[in-house]
Length: 104
Image 1 (cartoon, rainbow, N blue to C red):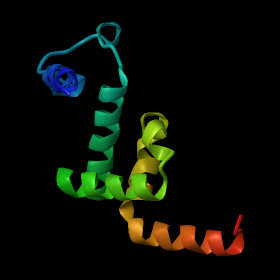
Image 2: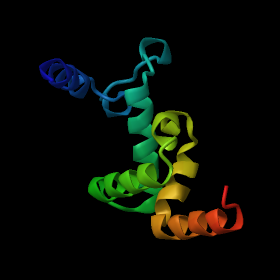
Image 3: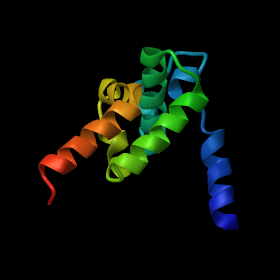
């Protein structure tokens, strides 16, 4: 709705701490989930050498494969996120193998 759009605009205007051009004390940074997720994505992009759009596509695939990951991504180590996003097709195949081994 309109409220969520205005909230999104407000969130989009918050500049990431690593994008600030001057030194900032950690005490002045409020690490909310949005900033954590942005940092995790930035590290994953660096490790995978892919574009923002490619990472977003892979994350959407991960969310489809592992729906519980959506709420837990901000707590995941960036290296693990990069590892999962590196080859979503291979992950899907492994998940199918697990389902065959453990049907319930």
